[in-house]
Image (cartoon, rainbow, N blue to C red; front, side, top):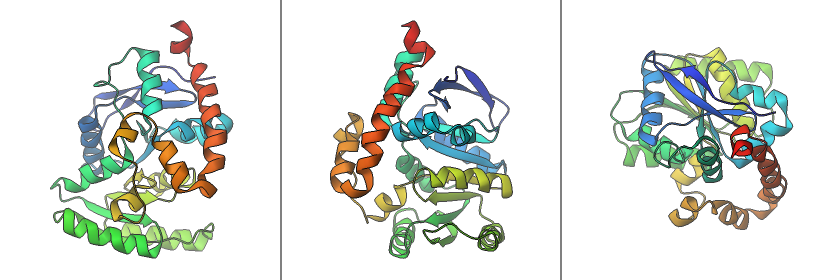
Length: 265
């Protein structure tokens, strides 16, 4: 079963209305309001796990109730990363493109870093080359952004001792926002854990590290706007992404068509 309409408390006392697609309650916020919400939560010290849901995320949540539960946590803010997800949401809940745009993780990362807020940022993810390039790009393009630390975790699961040491480093840095680029679904588990353990807004931004650092090519704007970005990414990384799209896209459609709003229409 899917989830329907609900609300989550906003940092300043208002509410974000959420709309269910598959098992995930999504906050349908205009882009600038989504960025405002992230910044407010960081400034007020409200720990939050920020997830960016695309078709693959919806598919994984449909198949795994434990994973779906991450998005239903009280400290979660779920934004619409994928264009097809935005299309389904608008159709199901009669929202316009202005009311329910795509809120793309890499774009949000750039927008938050560009603001002169004084917030302290921590970078968690990517390999050493990507992380080094990302820090250089941020220093050059966003000179007012305060990056207080960064690390490239091993690809294997961390031991309990390693995880505690990582958390101590993030806490000691004074970070208010932790940008997490570990890939889906690993990064969603990690931002949920970080928001429980540390006073940070933890952002699961995936390939944003690679795109912003320039270590991987990004799809042309027209493909991102027309929902065909997945073709570009599949062609760029067929070995890694073939299973994801061949399984994920049909499963996303299966989850989406069960949405009560679509059935009513």
